[in-house]
Image (cartoon, rainbow, N blue to C red; front, side, top):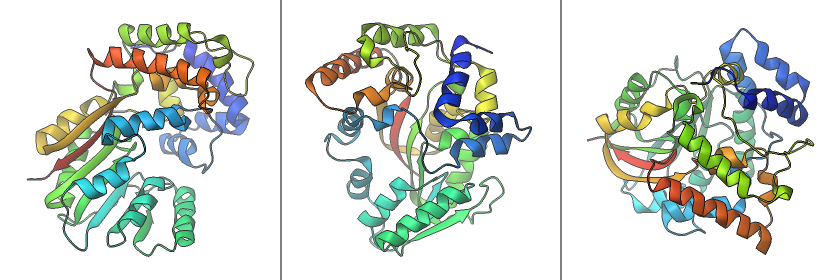
Length: 322
């Protein structure tokens, strides 16, 4: 466990350059909930993240659906059994609801409820739903810890990169089991790696091997004059200050789900190297020219090699309540 690392010191400077001093100062609130909200309350965050890279997104699709042009939303809408009519879906920690909006368009007969503690993000999602003419979505600005959900109400409970923000995982997964109807589905697209992203020495070494092979022009950190020549790993202190909920009990997600649910499908899609490696330098990989594609293919091969001996940090899964 790292309490403080060189990565933390560098990240403070990077965040101040990318998001400004007010964002940085928001992390010094005594309220853990306010610090968490400050991480998610903006509808547009200036950053450079692996999820922005088209080739990375195609890789996810290929590993999850088998088709790089098909996202998991259409895949799980069509490949798994749900009631013929009146499907009720609950999305928790839905944020701006980009995936839920897509599901609502793909499945107009589904009734989709989105719960998130950020009123700003849900207001933007509601505006988007109105633009699309969607009538099958509901938005609840609630704290899920205190929000009461009737048992056996939903056919689907859905998490997209939000389940790893909740704790304790055994109680939270049990609660999701209770709100699902018999044979209801839990659907996740989640980080399930080390708590607080406390990567081990082997993982850090593999990340830095990838960085060492990148050409210098791809390593300039977004909105700074720094070069990303090495990744040191996050310290616990900064993780807790930045967002007290981040990966708070992530290691127990799969064990607790497996303990209560039947696995219908579970597919890892990596991220062990690519997510931390591309953090703050992903903007260099947006163009799909020959040189950039070659750099990415090199990184993809490194991650594939790593995944042959290590479990994936990110998983798409569908699970059934028996």
